[in-house]
Image (cartoon, rainbow, N blue to C red):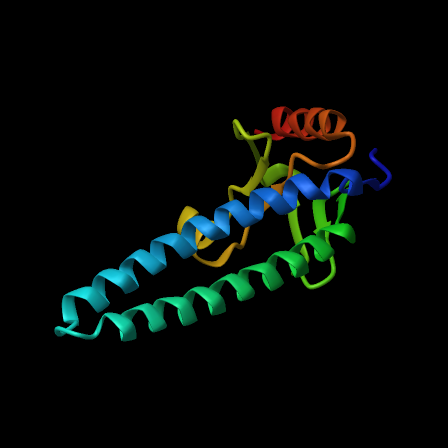
Length: 161
């Protein structure tokens, strides 16, 4: 019996999480800007360099501002994150995030090299997990008592899988 153990994010380590999210977003932004630049240069006529630069500056500004606002909202959401281990399942609740739950008998635990713990529901297809995020819970490395949480999750995985 687990009697609802609750794990939360270590708020002192939110800076690491924010940095990791920003790096990931800036990689995507760089890729998108590269595609936009390539398309603009290919379609450009002589003397349109100023227009291309203007489009790039505007697009870069919009994308960077959006990324910074999004990361701020995500980090604020993580401040309210609760990972709940109940008798029936593992659940995740946070403001501005969908409620997610995986029953113990369907749990697959996977640890990544960066410290993230991925929980998968084996009753949901891999396609649905990737496309819709259903049946997938990502637990960040900044979680308090992460080792105890991982041990508890592994214990349940070994019992039911």
